[in-house]
Length: 508
Image (tube, rainbow, N blue to C red; front, top):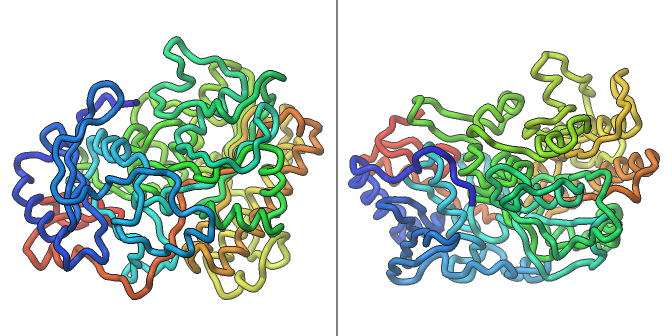
């Protein structure tokens, strides 16, 4: 377990009274339709509280947890990873209530959050069916601990991977980095780790390195993709390139669990560093740092190029580990804000003011569904961004992009696609717009697979297909904002990222 070298965010005595007052409101039955539970850390222990009960626990010093007290029903009693699969099971249990839901790795994912000194006083988790009407009313939502929001797809394929097909197995996103480095044949340190402070472990059950390590690894991330939907579309022939990878490797039916909070850049960074959000420092899409008195926003077009400046010191990436072992190796981060240590990065262009040419519209671009491009601004923009990413990746494998030659093939490439997140937010994971985004992304991924084949190294390459979190269908009729009730009670606080409450702080 990685711990930062900074003081954890224990609730201070000055905030105790306000915290208890806020907890009484947030866990009242009146807010139960929108509040799943509240997490906090005080007096050396962690708490999860809901309208039905609470649990208090602490680290036991041996990598596990000790339950100190339970009142009523513990909101995180079920931490199983196999709930609501396959797709038919999820559809039959849309919007599960707390008593029917599961919260994988909830002890660890709660504790790690408060390891960072900028963690909130209270972390409010919205219910499975809560629709953020005041913030845009997405039909697809994520961010909480519930299994459908946490579960990302995971497919390992190619050189060094067992061909086991779809297996009833789960992992965590922090396991990806050490597994990639194991596939590449990068040696572990004396403690058995590949990365400084890693939380993840090598997924050894899915590897077979008897014929040698992979010469190249390509990680492909379909942002915000519901794993049941992806696997079902692959099985029905609607995502043939996903099906190809699943047919030549191992797919985790129960998924790879995102760290808390289950949001974009926090978990992109977890994938690349092998650390949970509280340990690498990208805590959320937005948070408040009391040490500086500043709001930190990382998940926006304006802040992505510099987002990694918020990482804690000593954070290690896959790129760094490859370069330590092989100083002359070439690595690439395509359309990926977490580009720590990468030789090539899309965001290098932005940081030096040399932005690649952006198509004015997606019309005429390959793998683009016109039906949704025209009415949806987000679908249109994400289609352009993902086309640019695929173009970069294909160019690098072909040896040239924007008149720059690449003599070396990438030892490691990370390629991020954003369209699936935009579409599954807009229509929900079970919508036609979501399915179209998967089909479009599958086509772009196919271009990259073809480029690797043309480079003559397909049989020496391992592929990893993941998402950064899951996506759950919300209910438009279940809306509302807990901030209203808290402010009516006279409490002063900041609510960052929708759920990170900093008590006693004036709203930003």
